[in-house]
Structure formats: C-alpha cells, structure tokens
Length: 81
Image (cartoon, rainbow, N blue to C red; front, side, top):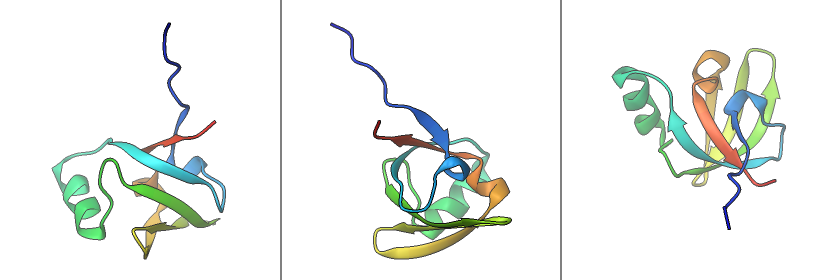
C-alpha cells in the first residue's frame, strides 16, 4: 500500500484562508536566514490572510508576516487535499 503525497504549491498559489505547512525553502543561505528571522521555518503551519498585487500576508504562530511575491514563490507549501 503506497501513501499518496499531499499536493505541493508555492506560497503564492494559496488563496486567502487556505492553510498549509512549509516543506521547503528553495533559496540560498540569505533567504533561509530571513525566513527564520520572520518565524517561517520548515514544518511551520501558515494561513494566507491576503494575496493581492505584489505581496502576500500570512499568519504563522500568531504573527502576521508580509512577504514579497518573489520570496513567497520560493516557499513550497504542502496543503491538505
């Protein structure tokens, strides 16, 4: 019996209200450090609050974090199907 992997998308692909878990930070050391400073870690659960224009606002561990679309495109998210 094989387990089916949940779908993975970037943080940019989530709609407001969707919940996902960060599975990969696809960037260099600087991006990973910036994410850690913002409280975004692999395994963290995030909820999309806003996804308009050039930025995205997410809630992670009770904090709201605003990210640019370029940075959000490098965060891979696992969502429940």
